Amino acid sequence: MSADAVHGAQTDYLDRYGHALLQVFGTPQLVLTHGQGCEVYDADGRCYLDLLGGIAVNALGHAHPSLVAAITEQAGRALHVSNFFTTPAQVELAEKLLSLAQAPQGSAVFFTNSGTEATEAAVKLSRRTGRRRLIAAQGGFHGRSTGALALTHKEAYREPFAPLIGDVTFVAYNDIAALQAVFADDGDEIAALVLEPIQGEAGVIPASSAYLRAARELCTAHGALLVFDEVQTGVARTGSWFAHQPSGVQPDAMTLAKGLAGGVPIGALMTYGPQVTGLLGAGQHGSTFGGNPLACAAALAVLRTIETDHLMDNALQISEKIRGAVLGLRHPGIAEVRGRGLLLGIGLTDDRAPQLAAALLADGIIVNAPNPRTLRLVPPLILTAEQVDRFVQSLHSHLDPADEEQKDISSRRQGPS
Ligand SMILES: *Cc1c(COP(=O)(O)O)cnc(C)c1O
Image (cartoon, rainbow, N blue to C red):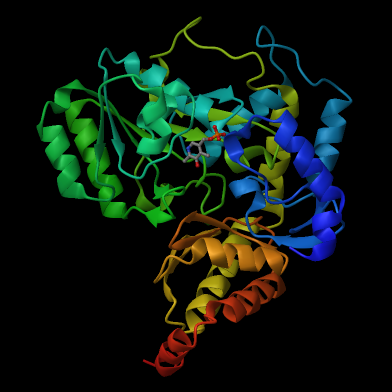
């Protein structure tokens, strides 16, 4: 960070943050005031290229005119009416999601305010099967509330709050044999298998279509619910409306949140078919804010804009551009580019992701390092080719280590292989 920034308005807010906010997030990197498109500004007026998009939330970037207009219009009509009543926006959004998900007759939507609440709804749904055992994947992330936390693999997140709801087994991700083994062992007691089609927080790890199909077959054979957590992968991010769709597999339930309303808090649980939908009856679940018209109007505007502006095509094209440009550097520090659409993980050959993220930030580019060997890009779906060039140039300039010995190695390996 530059010397002026250190003495600017940001320092003041960060100091006040330290005295006013619970410290669960540590110290924020920046104080952001506003944005436009894929760019965002800090309290000292510095502009950043935002390749994190609020962690896969700002699907339309910042201050998108169609989203601003929809929110403004809805705010002028009704912000909230309670779930004793419904609104046109709520009904239209539920219908739209069912149609995009290609969900069969008798499917339904329950709206929440966050991803973790969508997971909670899925856990409660699974309990109504009369079974308790839950299967989740190693590396999986499903939220921080206590039910969702029980399904979240990272020990450091769970341990301080033990005991959580019991009977959760973690299996190796994208490993068909491991799934078969867990179902072979008391498979008829499994209430649900909960999986991300591409693991996000783990560092952008995709599951194969064969794995998702095996999960479907095992759940069907044993009467367990197959739940896809598409909180991060869903809503066009991976170049299809939902990341599981190219596999042809239909889940029993799906959770959504992050990008759905472009930054307005929202989440959803979708239940597929009348049998699963019938598991939760009147009075068995609820939410004060869930499905409020503001969030639903925002989500409708996001979905419409993705369609009218062909943003799934853009996500796929820009994804190829990033992949080609990053791999085209032929740099020995880069092992691979994982993921689909605009959910990408740049896999490094060493533990430099945090330092690289810091160097990029100093250059005015926001990315994140979900683990020491991965840079994650989850930018707005409106990202342009020029913005990709800016990122790749900056990445390239910081990849070459200051250390001369390593520089030698990289120049030797630079040529075509
Ligand atoms: C972010 C995330 C969640 C939790 O969502 P919150 O809105 O933070 O509660 C759950 N599952 C996945 C896959 C996520 O990426």
